[in-house]
Structures are given as structure tokens and as C-alpha cells.
Length: 246
Image (cartoon, rainbow, N blue to C red; front, side, top):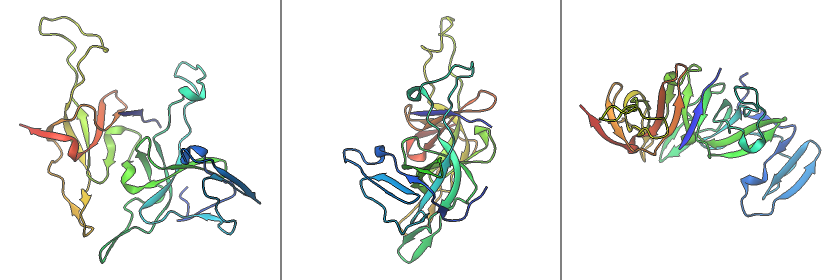
């Protein structure tokens, strides 16, 4: 389960390329080819032709400029690359034209310049103009950040934002529990809901829960976040909800 703590110029629909590098991790098990043509450098299983000078996502894909990983702990200790927390948020710098459902075209619902949170292992990483970027599908974006606080996140698609119930810190007999032995809660209150999943005709299916609902959810599902005041939140798909409590 992913976990992250949130802290703290719009570009045209196609981002210009001065130096484009796709890390070799994007093609697992394939020996990458390498070719340099002027300012274009590509490391991937397939070499991009030199006539391409822009990066424009296709269909429902989105290009993000990702945040830089933290290089120090809060105490100022330098972290090695392996220990640095992988960022899960970034800024939308280009979007595709959308998806086709039969005779209907559904445009990407995220605007250029939006600050978003995405699934930890989604997409393909690229380096563009000496900055890290990620190309991924719209459905891999968890939510839009309205502010720097997780409680204000706007979940996307069929996802819900839940305020996690506080774990019990005592046993029935009154013994204090340490954080390591506290039972992880799987109950919370719905704070915000997404617009719903797209059906075969491109129409949104409303979610069966609403804001304020108390729900029981799968214990190991979703992505966890910590609010500015230390409150725990989790974003998960509605299919990971097991029951509405009343």
C-alpha cells in the first residue's frame, strides 16, 4: 500500500523537447537501444525518430512534471538514492485528446496546470529539459490537490477519500498499546467522492456512497495520506468498500 505525506506554469498541450531520456526501467527485460540526434537523446527499446520535437500525450494519457524526491530527513540527514521517498505528486503539463466510446468522445477531465497525486508505480518515466516527467493514463491519477492538505483532495473516477478512524490505543483490560501493535483500522468516514467510472458508452456511473457515510473497507487497499494536522486519510476505489455502516 502506498503512503505519502503532502507538503507545500501552465504549459501548452504539447511540451517541447530539448533533451528527452526514457530510463531503462521503462523497458524491463529488453536491452535498450540508444541514439543521440542533436538535442534528442532516447534510451528505450524503441528509438524515437529525430523528426519528432514535441511530447504530446495520446488518447487519455497525461504528461506530468513530477516533484523532486526528498534528499534529506526532517532532521537534516542526507538520504542515499535507494532510501529517498519516491514522489507521488506532480503538475499536469500536457494532456491527450481523450477517449472514444462508440460514437462518444470523452475528453480528459484534468486541466493543464493542475496539481495531482498519482499511483506510485503507474506510467512511464521520462526526463525532459533536465526535469523528471511521467506519462500515464488519466485513470492512474488518484486525485487533484485543491490545497496542500490531503483533506481537500478531489478524488477522481470511482475513487473515494476517507478519513480513517483512530486506532484503539488500549486493550479491553486497559493496557496501553504501542504503534507497532495497534490494530490497523479499516473503518472510516467518506470525505469526498469521485465522479464515477465510465461505462461502455462513456457515461459516468454515480458511486453508491456519499460524503459523510461511515464505511468498512478492505484493510490493505488504497493509498494512504497524512493531513496537515496529522489526521490519516486513504483514497481507494469504491470496489474496495465492503459495507456502509449505520
